Length: 248
Image (cartoon, rainbow, N blue to C red; front, side):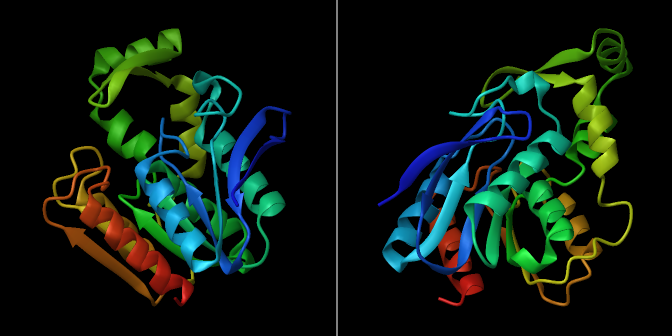
């Protein structure tokens, strides 16, 4: 039976979660920007974990899904703190961190901060440093001026309404950049990336693969896969990799 509830973030904001008890290593799902814990990948993993008797936890960051707070107030550092609270308070023992897009960045940050708690990483279209390399570096000068002057700019999205890119998001992101040198993570890592991803190019995932110091890094490219990797065959591969990294 899946437990639902919330825990307070460090500032008291309620963070909604769902979790299953079971054997270890457990699995902690870290979603992407503007996604929530009811998405296809999190749901597929929850179904697999329930059948396998595997401990599983998913949650919503501040300003996402069922959690409290405003999305505009979020930053990489803030959302990483949310994930750290969930890891330390809602899970026990070693965990497989499954990070999707932005969640891949946050998974790496957690692995660097809590290496003893992380058994392996499973990263789906991971987007470390996306605020700097995939957003800021590609913005025209007039948009950069708007963000600097007004503190926010609303970015058009193929997945729904335009969403805010704040000056705080960009500036805080610079304090958490990973791809400027070796990423000293020693656990096994599996990366799944679609060749047809328009949001986080597969070469960005390759940059992370090359930067990781772990001797056990595997990258799987899906020829027609998009950014979400939520087709039935994508979800089957995700579950397969999660089971492999957990040892069955």
